[in-house]
Length: 118
Image (cartoon, rainbow, N blue to C red; front, side, top):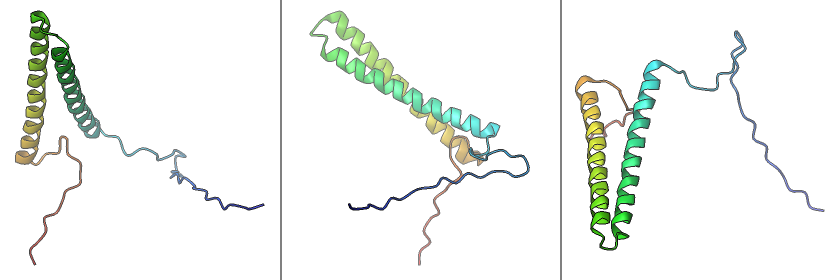
């Protein structure tokens, strides 16, 4: 009989001794919630517009020369492209506001430091 060694990982949980609560989640503040909501909305809007673009393309391909089908598909693709442009423009505007005023609306706290020439 051959014995195989097993490794056991132990999860570490920080417990606040004074209140007895577990410190599992990072500190939740109103600005963190707003940042997360804005980021979620941008990603969701971009994803939905991209899905509509794909469905419009599939609809166009499967229209089979039907005038009403092609027109409907063209309208869907146009609306999806306009939606993508609006989402990307809103992201660019938010980044410009962050840059000009030194705010953090959708960015995290980490920055990349430039490399100094030697």
